[in-house]
Length: 362
Image 1 (tube, one colour):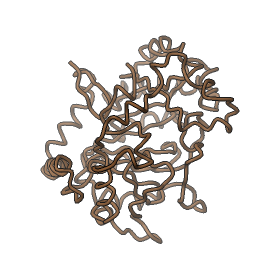
Image 2 (spheres, rainbow, N blue to C red):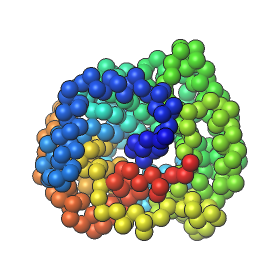
Image 3 (cartoon, rainbow, N blue to C red):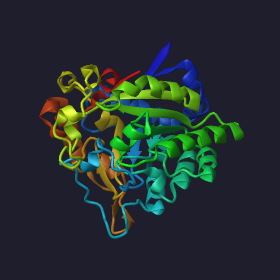
């Protein structure tokens, strides 16, 4: 038996790892009541959402130590209006304000967007603070920056879910698609993390290897499956490549044939996505970038639909007023009436937040 949650299918055995964190969600009347209010608002397609988002992305940092071929930071449409002077990191004090404001209503928190979370000096404190609110916390990392002591800290801070971006089954393809030669280092870091879980008698974090299938690595799927089992990770996910976001000029690629797999089953079908006329994200989730700018979806890589800013000149303005704002109401109305006319939605691979048959192969 498999259960589908946020574009992933899980066996009961896999979900057992997260059982403790899931059960804690049911101990919070605020979380349950808010979840139901959001679902009612979604069902009625209300412009004014009765609840607050229960799945949210907060971007700890906009910086990254990798230059991945498929990264949206290198797309022609990417924009970042955040501050550069102080670095692309969300101040820990700002993060605390956000969690204090809406943490009691959150079911899950994804601490990632464009940057590498482990570059933020307070990432373990961020995770620990969110866990005090009984939130399921996940990060997506290349895992190249993890030290032996950091492996234990990543376990002991309470992290529930770790996605490891790992687009190569060999040092050659890993370097080709990630822009750095850290294949062996990341393999060792995964082993260290699995060992830390055993040492601390912890089932979490649930470790998922995420592999985007491209021309040069599609022959390595079987190999990656094998060593993922040997490493002791909990799950491996194969994603279909999104050709629209690749900057071919930057990476000296002649055309899309240099990147697209020979097996077209591994290529994202945008035409099929556009047949789905609904999306849950403007009711269920939101993105808060490191700069404090709020967006309705992580797909807005060009920052074309800012809903507001939670911080201005160091002062916290609040997320709730942005969520109830005219900008958000208008955007929800557009989603309801003409989703395919909205640029960020037209090519969105996350539409409906449940179309895993368009997103990955297992």
